[in-house]
Amino acid sequence: MVAVGAANPSADDLATLESEYGPLCEAMYLMMSADGDVAREELEVLSGALRNLSGGVLDGDLIERLLERAKSNADEQGRDSRLRQVIADLASDKARAEVAFVLAAAIAFADDTIADEENDTLDTIAEGLGIDESRADELLDAVEKDMSAGS
Image 1 (spheres, rainbow, N blue to C red):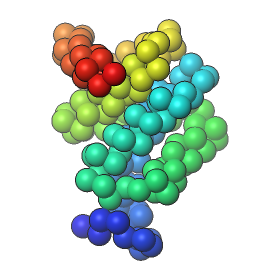
Image 2: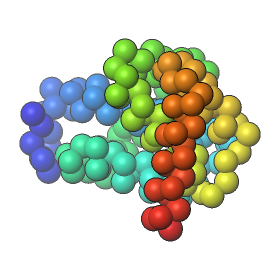
Image 3: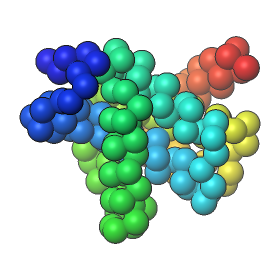
Image 4: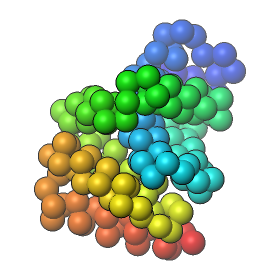
C-alpha cells in the first residue's frame, strides 16, 4: 500500500498509483476535452474525485502528473485511440467500469452544459464498457441528482 501523504513516493509507488488511477483519470480527461474546452469546474470535479477515490493518497502534484500523462497520451495517440485503450483497460472489472462511467458523467455535468461531443463520448464509454442503456440511464440520473444536490 502506498503511504498516505508520502512526500516523495517511490518509483514503485508511482507506478502502482498510475496503474490504479491512471485509466480513471484519463477517462475523465477525455470527457473534459471532448468539447475542446476544459472548464475550471471540470478540473475541480476530477481532482476531488481522484482525492476521494484514493483516500487522500493522491495529492495535487500526483493528480497533475496523471492529468499531464492523460493529455500527453491524447495528444500523441489521438483521443479516439486513447478512449478505446482506456475502455479496454477498464472493461474487465464491472464495478470499476461503472465508476469510470459515473466519473465521466460527473465531468460532463460539472459545467452545467453537456455538449454533443460529451454526450457522444459518454455513449461510447457506456457501450465499450458493456453498460446497457437502462443501467446507463440509472447511473446518469444518480449523477445528475448528486451534482444538483451539491450546487
